[in-house]
Image (spheres, rainbow, N blue to C red):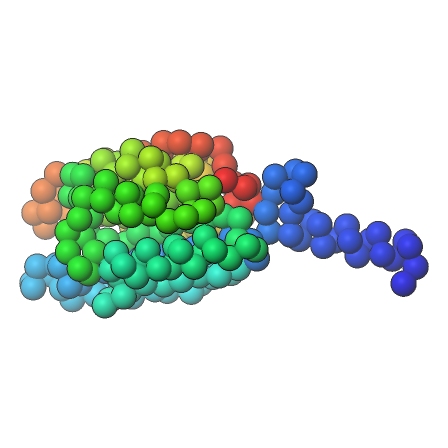
Length: 238
């Protein structure tokens, strides 16, 4: 191989994978952990609806998350437990190639709490479990949650090591717009704040929140707060 061709090949590889010198990372160096569990803890008369929402989350994982991450771990149904989440995080933390771990939650939430398959836990308990995983906090990057009252969970996940996190102010009903809008823009290189801003389109929030209110879902406010390093992009190291 001539010197010129070698330099060209190495340059292309650097652009694809990122460089330690510029703090950028490539697709193969980032992992997404997706947790989906809504139907089990839903009221019986709304279980069918939440099964539909779960199916939509699975589709988004396949169509929008897998193409932009080197590895995707989907924890759903009986696998959406705290021990399983801990194990998935340990695996990512111990893989040398992995530089960033993002987590996407599609779970029921309450002020300060989140429901996994194995029960309703405080966000602080989940965060404490994650922060105790060796080498993980340095790799944790973004936490995106569709759980109700997700804004009340943010401080705990930031304390666990995530660099940026978002969550709804109160009951969340805007996932049908917010999730694809966020993922589309995040995958194209927008900052976390900008991607979430697209998801926070006031017209769609008003539309879905009105419907949820008419269903008697309580205090509805789907606007997602963002805290932490909001200018980070999918190609930035934590």
